[in-house]
Amino acid sequence: MKGKNIAAACYLFILLQLTLSCTNADKNAADDTAIKPGTSLLQLSNIINLPALPPDSVLFSYKKMGDASDNIPGPTDYMLEAVLFYNDTTINMVKELSNITHTDELNTEDILIYQFDWLNDDIKSSFKGLNKQAVYPADKFYKGPLLHGSYIIIGNKLFIYLHTM
Image (cartoon, rainbow, N blue to C red):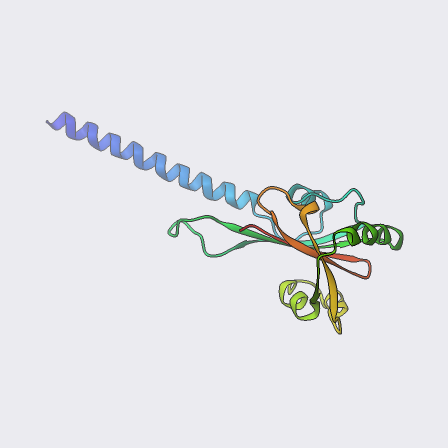
C-alpha cells in the first residue's frame, strides 16, 4: 500500500512538472513571436502578402485583440494596421491597379485617426479634412489568419487594416 502511494505521488509530481513546463514553453513561444510596431519590410512580408509593386518603406502595428489569457479560453484574434509608402511613379501604378476593385467610399478622417492612433502626428495630419475616400478590398494582402480588411490610398501612402474574425 505504501509503495502504491509513493508511485502515485511520483506520477502526480511528473504530471505537474510536465504541465508547468509546457505552459512556460507556450508563454515563451508566444513572447518570442509577439510582433511590436515596426518598420521592417521583411518582417511585414512575414505577416501579410506584399504586392508585386513593393513599397519604399513601411510602418505597421500588429496587435492581439481581446483578453484571451491562460484563465480565459478561446480563440485569439489579431489586427494589423500598416502604412506603405510609395514614390510618385509606383503609387500611380498602385492606384491604377486598385481602381479595378474599388468597392465603396468612406468618410475617412475619423476612422483613420481612431484606428491608426499609434502613428506620428505628421502622418495623422494627412487625415485632416478628408471627406470620402475610395475603399478597396484588401484580399491581395491576406495571409494566414489575417483574412479580412480593406485599404485606402492617400497621397503616396497606402493604409491597410487587416484582422482575423
